[in-house]
Image (cartoon, rainbow, N blue to C red):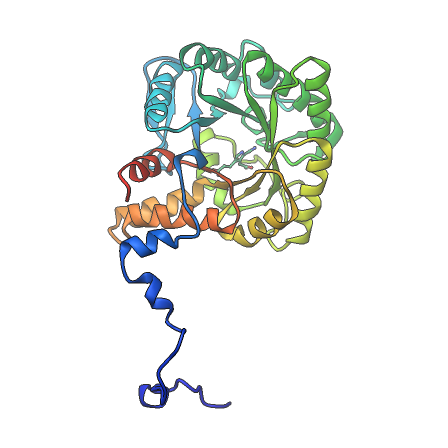
Length: 343
Ligand code: PBG
């Protein structure tokens, strides 16, 4: 091993003045730092995921996600109005479905009088200018807790896609601006696009969960929606965390099938994937700052171990820097407030 040329301050002391090599010059004052900042997080980048439940007048905190709640539709409308007031322009909806409405084919997912269609209609009436993204997947509706129909322990692809198409059409009919297939079945983006177009929903967009990994970071979300798999795991449809090139393949397929926005999920442990995908596509790229990422920050902050506000902004900024144009985050309101206050 050779000794580092900067091993000690004496050795490092320059014999001649350093010329043109003072990066610290640009960090000297806050004004300079602002002028030379490369990445800017803004409220327009944020999408606020929200959990909705049946009933009225209730707001239940999700134990694994302090600060996040499941709202009945009346209180959801109030929460959306608060988000809107902070400048947040888009929300993503996820339902808690009662156990008795779940079955293996997720039939409730395309019931026009189901929870999500009713909520979509209510939102469109009360807060028409908020952009609403609704999730397309069977897991909240599945007695098996899987994103697809199960037969003999296997997740059926094409049979599931047929149900996802019905679900997407039901949501479009009820007023969804975007549908967001989060299931990872093959060919679903193309099938949904074709069906939407055939039914005249040409303006309904598709936010595709294109590179969605089989991640342990979804734990708190599954607890929130009571949607954990009843057997096995999701590794036959969600991606192996060790793979990067496979993400590019998934993105290419979703692009060809008609996705309007592509998403990478989770975000924090996959910033390299975000970066690569940004270089490979001209579509807007979204990152999902998932429930486990949220819960870790909340837990450490509650212990007093980290400065929550600073860590939130640093984390979201890292996602933007890595290539995210949009970020789904449970911190949307906190971030919007801090950005407004110029922190
Ligand atoms: C399921 C879905 C999941 C999330 C969004 N949609 C969980 C899963 O795939 O098991 C996770 C979101 C989060 O963890 O915040 N279709």
